[in-house]
Amino acid sequence: MADVIDTPPLLRLRGVTKAFNVGTPMETEVLHGIDLCLQRGEFCAVMGPSGSGKSTLLNLVGLLDRPTQGQLEINGVDTGTLDDAALTRLRGHTIGFVFQYHHLLSAFTALENVMMPLLGARGFPDAAMRERAASLIDSVGLSALQHRRADRLSGGQQQRIAVARALAMNPPLLLADEPTGNLDTRSADEVFALLRRLNREQRTSILFVTHNPALAERCDKTLLVVDGRLATQGGA
Image 1 (cartoon, rainbow, N blue to C red):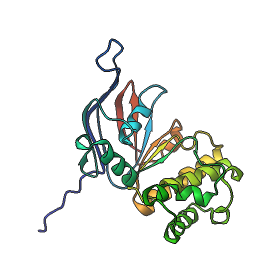
Image 2: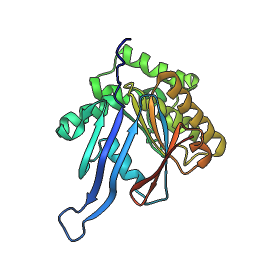
Image 3: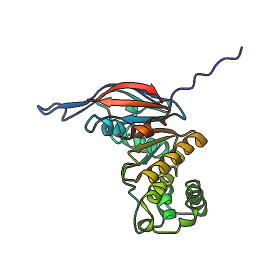
Image 4: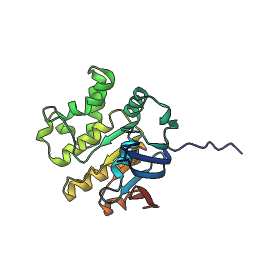
């Protein structure tokens, strides 16, 4: 019988804690011994009350901050062994971000906004970059609007462009921090459906922070963060 190759998870946290004001009388630990595993192609909802530690957890996974203790691995790389420059490179090529507010540059077109991560990586625009951005905009259903300025798009359209921008570097991991929170019900459903389709077609792993239980039920599993701890971890 052929040997079975054990593929490591895309994301693994072991005993991760996060404290602020370390070493001072104001020291406060906000995450306590987080153990988390996200497989490649998995779509995972993250829920919990305000102040529970969801944003802190996402900042750690997004390599925007470092754990106080514990181990955080992405793509099999122990991020605790990396310096700041190496972390920046890993983040830029491995992780895409979609936030509650789209953070598009209003004076630029949809196409130019999607090109921004590519410009950051390559330094100058070229035909291949424009083709990649146009293809991504087509994948989110907005080809007809690619040359429209961002401030002339609807809220749902802006968030779709933000999703396309997050995928510009073809990251295996997408972090979505309440991306439907500012949208009406129809637009929120459309953006979620888009993320779900991209997850299934491209096998992009997604951590989806939401307060909407109806959307969480449509994910592969749900993590509940309460008082800085993972209280439950179950399937959809």
